[in-house]
Image 1 (cartoon, rainbow, N blue to C red):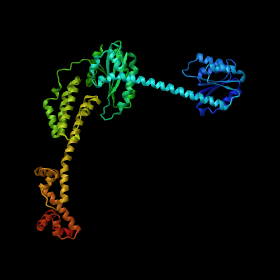
Image 2: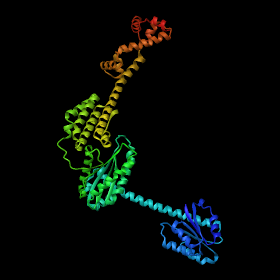
Image 3: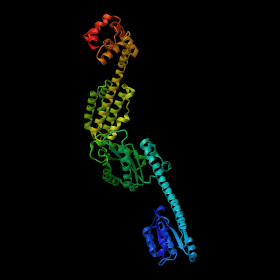
Image 4: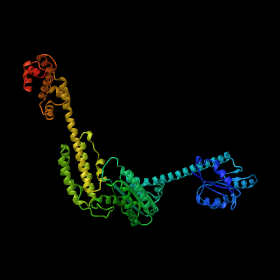
Length: 539
């Protein structure tokens, strides 16, 4: 609401102005009614009204002085609309007030229609001004955001597209393309990684926590930088710090202080964990790749530092152990054989041996990452070579276990469980694929049992070799092909014997037997009753 102050030395005039208007309907509120200029000025200073309706002649300070003093001495950051009340004898004063920029003047006696018209005009001007200011502020904010996005694109290109050639660009070229000017000499790469301890397709924790962490980092660290860039990239916040002096210790101190800030918002997701890795500080942009790689290496070395919040690459010796020493050719062949045979338990046992061997090298993050990736690629190769298109899998999906989970056991147990789950899915698909031709064969038999049926014509109907089909049928149903045909014929003969009055010879022919004696012998063998005895017993 717009705040209104009424000032007139005549109490009746002040009350008249107050009661002439329905202030709330106009979106206005009268914050004071005073009878002298000094008191009016005090309220203007204290409450900063939007509109002042004042008489020209008042004790202590007249209306003209009040307008002049307010314009000259006060800066509210907003316009105050003055409306002057005058009599005919004070017309020259009113003209002077207009020159000072008052909104309007009203002659006594004041009329409701005239006062309402002036207030509506002020309201329109105020709204227009407010909209213009809002639009200007929005434009300014949008421009700042756009400039920051262009700057951040420098870091995005480095991280997403690996445009290392940008590090060799001339400073003016960088400014021209990305609107960032690296006035400082020192560069540091920092990665804030969110481990959720769950692996899902759409994890809401990233959308909620990472932008908040990004904002907190800016608030704590931007003042120490000549240039600052920050992007949210998958499960991480990635930052580039550029400073005129080597302020690494100050950066790290501020990053440790983030732990408390982060823990407050992280309480909403109790299973998650935030870890920060800090790359080496370098003194040239051309060497920034070193800072990036050492930050990545520090994060890879997390398995031997499970309780630490901030990780730095300390240049530990990786040792002579290589990925091929853990995932040997023999083990790789074993894994591929297990996949081909869908031997889930042997596959799990082989992965367990690899994990057990690797657990002795927790301080070698590069080795652990290499082994994990090798296992993923081996599994994907085997699956896509042997499995049907219904069970296709990508490396990206299985790498999520390494990216989303923090501990060594959690990472490798997740990989093992998910690979075994995929193998079990394939086993089910293959089972269903084998069942389908049997289902088609049974359907054909049930529709044609009264005709001449042989193993050959049924196997030809479903597109299988007769010998293979016979073996598959026995494996799936537990009985020979012709035994199943006889069972279906006798079942239908039972129904006809009970439900119709046809003679036995006709029923035999209807279910596929031209020899009555043979039919009766088969019927008794399966039911221990002759066809006539069965009819008498069950009709």
